[in-house]
Image (cartoon, rainbow, N blue to C red; front, side):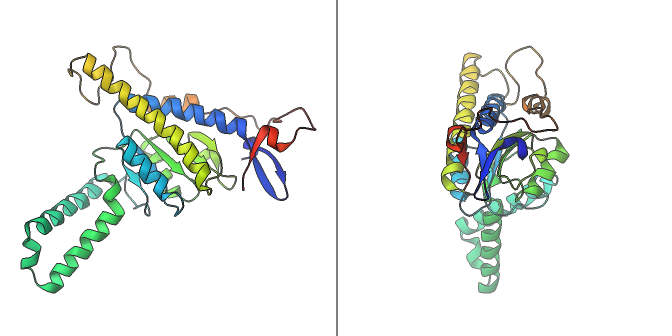
Length: 261
């Protein structure tokens, strides 16, 4: 993370706010195009302080979210995950129709616990019908299993990461404080806005075309680069030695960076 750090004061690293802005702009541009293509974006954040922000992002964009623990195989074994979601629908239908009351008290209690468990772990991705076009992760060090599955399938990863993370595991780096609620909310809100604009642009193009094109078919005849290629193009190329963030030795951290508490 050295290229993204402005300095250190009292054993606290200070992020270079210019690197944060560069990463945020790259991520906004990338997610805008993903949403404009009609692909889904998976929001991942299981920290207690950011669960609400991730949940709100999913509600605003209509995209799947993971706010509880990451279930192994969510992406790499997607067919099994879909089968569990079908089981959830089956249990919900039983409860709505009153069929569950026919069972014994013990069996009814077991079925309700099963429904609650599946809903807690997989409820956020029940509308995810296919592998997402990209995932947005808060604190990649904590969500390393999600990142490993995404990289295995070639799904681009946008990460909001602190100084204790490895930036090489994500495709687009947004350096920032991933523990502070206000910091995460500010960055996620900007990303959500880009996704909303991309989705709105797609709806306008679909309406203009008379709805003749499929939801997953890009508008336009020119070939488009793959999502992984675009993410790689947006990823900054860093030299082995981190470049100095400023040439003015007397500049205070408040002039070039934001404190990372």
